[in-house]
Structure formats: structure tokens, C-alpha cells
Amino acid sequence: MTLPPMTPVLVMAAVVLGLLVLATLAVWSLRRVKPQRDWGELAARVRSWWVMAGVFLGAVAVHPAVSLVAFALMSFWALKEYVTLLHTRPQDHTMLFLAFLAVPVQFYLVHIKWYGVFVIFIPVYMFLLLPVMLVLAKEPRGFVASASQVQWGLMAFVFGLSHLGYLLQLPALPGRVVDGRALVLFVVFVVELSDVLQYCWGKLLGRHKVLPTISPNKTWEGLVGGVLTVAVLALPLRFLTPFEPLQTVLVALGVAVAGFLGGAVMSAVKRDFGVKDFGALIPGHGGMLDRVDSLCWSVPLFFHYVYWVCY
Amino acid sequence: MRRFLQILFFAAVVRPFLALFIGLRVRGREHLPAADPFVLIANHTSHLDTVALLSLFPLGRLHRIRPVAAADYFLSGRLRAWLSTTLFNILPVARRHVTKTNNPLETMREAVGAGDSLILFPEGTRGGGGEPGRFLPGVAHLVESCPEVPVVPAFLVNLGRSLPKGTFLPVPFFAEVRLGPALHPTGTREEILVQLEVAVQALREPG
View 1 (cartoon, chains in turn purple, green):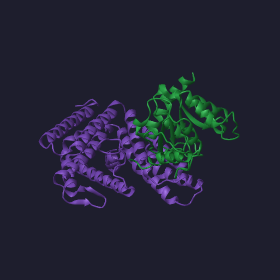
View 2: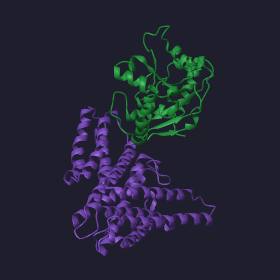
View 3: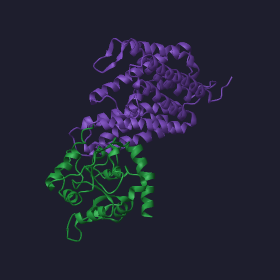
View 4: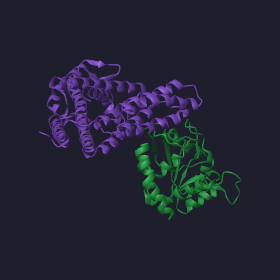
């Protein structure tokens, strides 16, 4: 049986819609049962999820080019949030301009499916170019810090997130309905659901902090509960993947753990900058980076696993 | 025609650029007077300062808002002069060779008298982005001679990082405009000047 290519998007839209309705009802009943507590932040989070899910599913459903533009904007916004918090020198100006220019270039490489350059453009060419721009700016003091921090941001937010775009471009496997779009839906759903479940388990049972100096909100109970739950819940989503059942569970586990680590890394970045959130773009969540932090770590791993095993 | 071009430019270029590229945030928009004339004063670190402040106003009101700008710089060169007068509707004032006929104070008073509002950078020039410089005394003269015109303080954050003096490629740092409540400073000119400086400085710390 062959499914029309819209089916994965429609099924996932139905699943997400169901979850959002559940979450909205949960917030509504919590407000009734315990009106003395402040549910404002939770309500804002759920409302924002409606918007994010709508925008994301819409962008994925319409056309691959639209999805790529949406992913590029996501990447651009994340890099903006990061660079704004950096200590930059006036001499970094031209280098920073070129670093931002790498966003459209990288996503254009994704668009034309030039895999060989896509995987080296930022790690090799931008890595070589940026310090040269700083040399031309003729100020050695602060050179290493400037060159390193900007390259780091490019790797995390542009190189990392652009894998979401290349994943989308992967063709259907021979004899399978699974294509890049289904894989994008799978990995994003697993990572984001894992974030939500870690938050829920942490709120319910959280006692022992995993990384007290980095992120006081992350607990062992949340981490283990969230990761295990999402690994089980990924099983019915196997139709989006080319994986065997056990493989699906293990991939979901790996992706969820990588997502946790991505979130922890970005928490460390925020601690270092002395900020609570990266911005105020998404009510209840913070900035773009506060939402995509886990994707920066999990999507490249997922992509290279799939690419290596299946393509 | 000039008004049409300016409105088109702000609707099609400036607003999308500030919203999507810079990600400009505005705090204290409610302090923006509903009626002209008023004088908007701000710290100055970038050419984007004027662009960002003008973008705060409804398109239909843009033609009433005149950024006060140095004639020797903004009217030099054909392209720069055309852009400054057509798209930004600057009020050119003389910085050098000031005579009775081109006294900047007189030019500004006339514009305010005609019901136009002014955007004024009292430091007189773009600074390096550190501490705002001291205000030049001209603004105190203006305030003293038009006591009924409200002065609105503004503080601009990060625009000087996006497009500092001497560069022409904008880098999209997030930026912010902070507006404070309008004031009617009184006293000697030195006292007026200090009140204005304090009002702008007070917006440095996000409230």
C-alpha cells in the first residue's frame, strides 16, 4: 500500500492537535481545582505551543522551499540572540556581518542539495575566513575570544539547525513512503515532546538536581522519566521512520538524551552571560534559542545516523 | 510626491528591516505624544538612530517629524542630500559659519512654530557607544524659548553596535528604543541641560 505524501503531515497534525487540546484542558482544570496557584506561565507556554505547532506544521506542509525559509529564519533569529549577548569589539564588525551572511549561504546549499559543501562550508570555509577578517581589522587584543565565540555560534545555531533542512531534503527510500519530511516530523516531535515530558516529570517528582551549577530546573526524575516515556511513545510513530521497532526506541532515547544535553549547554551559555532567557519572542518559553536549544544537539546526530544507516 | 515616497520607503523598507532584521523592541511607546509639536531627544551612536525613532510614528504623521541634522554633512553629496531631504525630511541646520540668517536655533524655532516636531541628538554627533557625551547647550536654548513644547527623552540601545560610525554594513544585533515621560524643564539653561541629560540617562537601566 502506498500512502500519499501528505499523510505523515496530516497524521502528525492530528496527534499534535490532540495533545494540545489535552494540554489546554489540563491547564483549564488545574485552574478550577487549584485557583489559588498562579497558572499564568503554564497557560502562556501552552498557548505558545499552539502557535509554534501551527507555524511549524504549516511551514512543513506547504512546500519544501517554505520550510527551508522558515528553518533559515529560525537559525538567523537564534544566532541574533546569541551574538547580541556576546562581548563584541568594534573591530569584529565585518566578521560579524559575514557570519550572518553564512545563514542564507548555508541554507542555499541545503536548497540545491550540495551535500559535499553543506557539511564543510561552516566547519572549514567559515572557520578559515572569519579569523582573516579579524586580522584585516588589525586589532590583536581579544582576537582569540572574538574568533572562537562567533565560530561556536555558527556551528551550534547555523550548522546544527541547517541539518533540519537537509533532513527535509532527503528523498524517499526505495520501496518506502518514508521521506525527509516524515523524518523531520519524527525528530522534532520526539525532541520537543521529550522537553515537555522532562518538564512535567520534573514538576511532578523532581527532587535530585542533575546539574545544580548549570541548570537548577533539570532533575534526575525529570530526565529519566521524560526520556523513557518519549522512547515508548516514539514506537507508534515508527511509520515516519525506516527503523525497526527496537531501533526506533533506541534512536528516540539517543535523540532525547542529546536534546537534554543541548538544553544543558545552552543553560551554561545563559549562566555565563548572566541572563535567564535568550529573549522574549515566545511567551512562557523565552527566546528562539530557549526553544531550539535541544534541536541544535539532537538534529545533527539524528541526521548523520539516518544518513549513514539508510542512504 | 516627497510625502508619498517617504511613506512608501518607511512601509516597504524601514519597517520590515527593523522588525525582521534588527528585531527592534520599543519600551514606553505610551510616552510618545499624540499631538505635535514636541521635541524628542536621544543619545546618538548610529545612523540607524534616526531611522528607528522615525519608525515609531504612524505613516500619516511622518511628514510632521523633522530630524535635526547637520547641513554640512547631510546635504553634501547628491545622493546623501536627496535621501536626507526626501526620505527622512531632515531639518538641516548649520554647524559652521553660523550667521544671523542661518542660526540653528532660529531654524528649529521656526519649525516648531509651524507645528512640526523635532528629533534632536543633543550630543551633536555620533558617539562611540560608551557613555553618552555631554549635551551641547543649543537644546537648552530651544527649550527655554519654547517652554510650552514637551520634551520626550529616549535612550537607544545597541543600534550603535549594528551600524557604528564609519561602517555601512548593518549587523543584526537586537536593539531597543526606550522612551520616558515627557518633561517641561525649567530654570537656567545649565539646569535645563542637566535635567535633559538626567532624563535620558535614567533610561539606560531597563525598568
